[in-house]
Length: 61
Image (tube, rainbow, N blue to C red; front, side, top):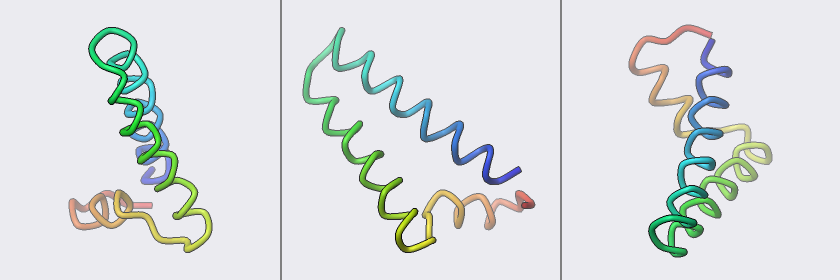
């Protein structure tokens, strides 16, 4: 369950920031890059902040 939530949140952040960069300001692309960098970092280190947050909220694997 946690894995699906993490993917949903990451995908939503990317799509929302892309829409904000089109309609509001291009600087929102930095947020897209930040999310992508975190996804890359979590694939290398096998640690994800969102996973930790969800665990503290009581979401089960």
